[in-house]
Image (cartoon, rainbow, N blue to C red):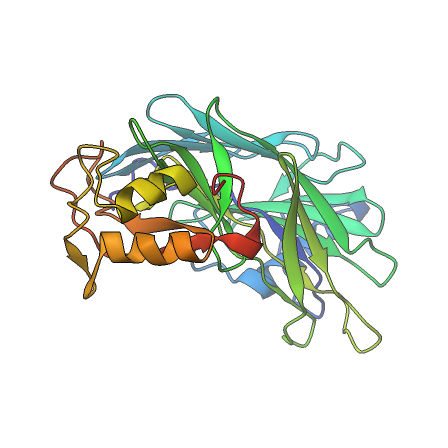
Length: 315
């Protein structure tokens, strides 16, 4: 991937971490000290190797699949925006209670100290085309449930990826849904680097992250929601009626390989038949570099989704 200007990204993280050296800031004073401590906590958890720098003014990432413009907020009540070349964008709000002003470190971490009770917030742009919004829960009194409001383009929705994260999907052109963005599975670790259980849930378009701290948790802890938009990830999802058509050897879209074609030693029809029998739906991987989808799609693997996961499209 080529980077135009600086690569920026929007990313969301919930963090609890301690014991990091405080980075140098240009000015002194209590506010700067608070910001420096917030930066130190975040950068101990994430490192700085993949941090691209400040993106509060919006920067363009150029890839072989189009450009993505990422903007992180100048204050805590703003929204992270990741916009594709067609001007569609996915935005995310931070879980702020106070509109704290952002301060950016030399490495590119922007922090919003005391933006919520016992909580600092932060954002980072990353060199891989993503971004982090970190929530530093400073002690055991900080809330362990964090809510991130998502703004989705018209026609976009979320589908659980089966690994704890979500694909952000739109119409694949006639049938099915194609992933144009992704929310990675969450992670969390305490001040000693020990993993802390964490998970996502959804309420409408609100992403909720829960961190399961306990008596043995060393505060602070870091937990991480991360999303991208505008780069085709290559996963295509079909619903139950479309899956049944494929299982019977039919075609739902012109670019879909023939149902008798084998994928990983199995035919699409056979995989779809298993999905129908188990009350699930079919999904498969395509060449992420081909946009728009075409009959020349390279199928890279397929499987099923839905069932007990309760995916909204598998119905």
